[in-house]
Amino acid sequence: MHEEQFIDMDRRKDDLTSEQMLKVIFNYTAKIANERNLDRVLMHMADMGREMVVADRCTVWLLDQQKQELWTKVAHGVSELRIPIGAGLAGHAVAAGEPIFIDDAYSNEEHKEVLADGALKTDRQTGYRTKALMVIPFRNNDGDIMGCYQAVNKLTEEEVFSAKDMEYLALAASYSGKSLESAMLTNEIEATQKEIIFTMGEIGESRSKETGNHVKRVAEYSYLIALGLGISRDEADVLKMASPMHDIGKVAIPDTVLKKPGKLTDEEFKIMQSHTEIGYNLLKNSNRHILKAAAIVAHQHHEKWNGRGYPQGLVGEDIHIYGRITAIADVFDALGSDRVYKKAWELDRILNLFKEERGQHFDPQIVDVFMEQLPRLLEVRDQYSDAMLEEEDKSY
Ligand code: C2E
Ligand code: SIN
Ligand code: SIN
Ligand code: SIN
Ligand code: FE
Ligand code: FE
Image (cartoon, rainbow, N blue to C red; front, side, top):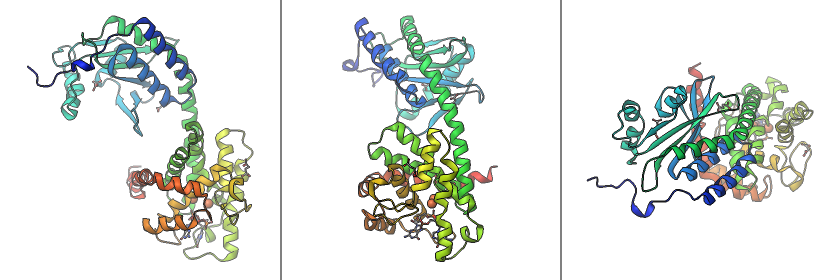
């Protein structure tokens, strides 16, 4: 006898009644239809599938034709998971265009090798016990395979997935198909925009010897602070994409000023300050939502809560919330990094400055959120450290 039981008795469930099934479908399709963010569509689809077939886990994999990979969003993780097509059960099902059913991963002969290299290996590392597996490829309206549903462990008494379950997942996929395709398109466009934005941002920064990771860190800090303030994820996403361009106006600042190793004269600092208006003028004529946000950020990231910032000397909430957030993100990063004109500061010294400038340079409420979010901000700082970037650069 096995010591650990695969499903303990009080966790066992029943298949859904048709009434419950309708409710699940109704709730999730409404959520999915309103969602344009691809990662969140995938998460909702996975949740819907898991509830419909009463599985312990469910993953939605999408096919990336270009890279010949399947990818998915890991629940609550920061990054996506990718596997080469042809690897794993999911890859096999997609490559063959056929569903795969496995009643017990430990006694299955047909997929023995894939399982040994996948689920069983993972089980050994995690202590999880995989038993039943089901992988169902799904297609778009043109009949092309878009990806697959993968469900693990059936939580009912039977412990195995049925043909009915397959139909339910196919149904879940077809209900989600349209939202999924439009979210993928949006994702594709936004990925392109993001690339352009980072490239533009890096042009501004690289001339001042600040690395490309500066703009990435500022983007992540701004995003986390925005969420901490209770701003919606959609709007936080916009800020995340816009904030890397805050210093784009530095492209027009002469090297003699930008790269001066020492302190700037008053006149040089005036020239330096013009990077806000230059950036604003570069971006303000676009009708694109993200570029409009970027124009605001470029213009206002050096404004101060007390009205002593530049270029307009705006006060308090007259400064756009995007400007107030990016101001903190930018200074946090600038102080923590070496610049041609200064060494990086210790964290304590940085935090003291934020305490002193709370209500002076910075919006007090945002400083409070900044302090709350600090552990996560420091994680980002580690993840996108400049040392890491140098490693990456070598590989080109
Ligand atoms: P940056 O290096 O990205 O710095 C952004 C902001 O971080 C600065 O805006 C300032 O608010 C804060 N910050 C950075 N370093 C320090 C510091 O050592 N002490 C304090 N208290 N705050 C700091 P700011 O001052 O408006 O400067 C805008 C940009 O002008 C800077 O961007 C940098 O490119 C340039 N800059 C400022 N001061 C100097 C300088 O003395 N020498 C040179 N070469 N450039 C400078
Ligand atoms: C796979 O083999 O595709 C992965 C199975 C799993 O770990 O759930
Ligand atoms: C991705 O590769 O992350 C996105 C693929 C797509 O949206 O088509
Ligand atoms: C700006 O002046 O920076 C943009 C105006 C705004 O939309 O806040
Ligand atoms: Fe700036
Ligand atoms: Fe900056």
